[in-house]
Image (cartoon, helix red, strand yellow):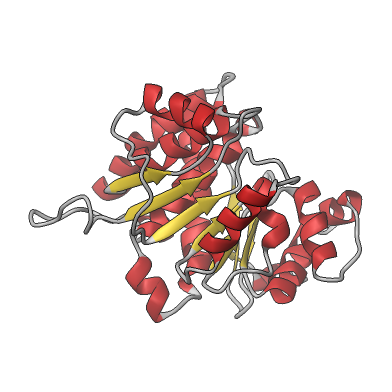
Length: 279
């Protein structure tokens, strides 16, 4: 895949996708994000995704995941609403086991049938071809393999890692979704054509839970731009690239050259957003 076909994406491009509330806005008009993430084994994924979304800028978050994860979420973020209702977008799958029981399977499929934009991650990626609305997939190299297998394309992690650009494009074409393939350079490919390469922060960002924070950042950007997505679903590629850049920059600021944990990335997000708006 020629390098020239991939546009770089940085601060200038990301800044236009930060939704700034006006004087007349309320929590609903600022965007509502539904979140179905985490599990009894991995409740922290739910906390990190909610932190990422809330600190990027969204009016309300509805968390509808498992009870144990909900307790962790509410302990950390008491403003989160744990009642289902209307949303502008969904974040689904972070920390979710790929072996879903019948109730969880039905819950995820019901969300995918709503027609609203969905950010699909981790344990829910196997349902990438089941959505009825705009989808953004956020796999790492290994997670892309079963996504492609479900679409009838066989490969392995080594092959994906050797050619992430090419496999991101193949996955987007096979699923009809926007694909954000995570790595030291993140590649965003859309089935309709847009392709972006984003430097994903310093190597210290490669830490447990960082992808959960990224899912929250992207979920917030999608929820706050639902009208633009409804008019032109290809803007999902720019939103995904913006999320990757904002997340990486938050990692850089949090690190300062040293080690960090995922929650540090989330806590640095307001600084990054403020910096984009100041510029």
